[in-house]
Image 1 (cartoon, helix red, strand yellow):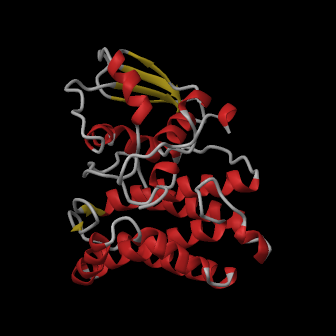
Image 2 (tube, rainbow, N blue to C red):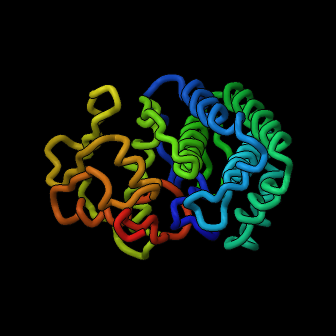
Length: 281
């Protein structure tokens, strides 16, 4: 999959995290999508071809990718057999199928693409809301619960929204919804090592992040030697590879924690170089 290492989240997060302890995931997913909708809906058609930091991807590609992935998630929830057939196509062309889906959608007139995105995410919202307790759905990696699927969709919507905001020169105000993105980033720690052919550290890390309202979100044992601290926004930008570590106020204590910050990723797929430091661009 091209550009996964250049800060485009092309797959939902690896592993099978437990249900996020925070309430109303679907409400937060809806709010995240609506915020991005308000950013792109007023744009003139020509602006949809504006290049984003993801090489080869315009604003239209970003929305087309979200539309495509929402459609895949809806199929996984409502027709697992049909999804299995589609995922087989992905396995046959792992380096191109995501880009192909985005490219096809980007050819649509912006108004039609926007309508498809809105319809698809509304359908997925209803399907996830109506999923029976304990249900698990197939995905490109391990099966996912409804909560995991919603959290993953929120993470990806936020990350691709950041690409769009950066392209437009817009600063988005961080919200408490970042807690879901941060949670995935923490949960995906071991995957960042495994995808690089390395063994994850045996001991857990302590992660302490300051949320937008000044609240502190904590993960891992309080007495852990390996520690990561910093603003939640910066941590989320780091683990979705939307900014280089050198440009962020995320700090590590301990050699293992320090090494993790160099490779952290909240998305599945091959490791990539991420974004260059601002001074190197």
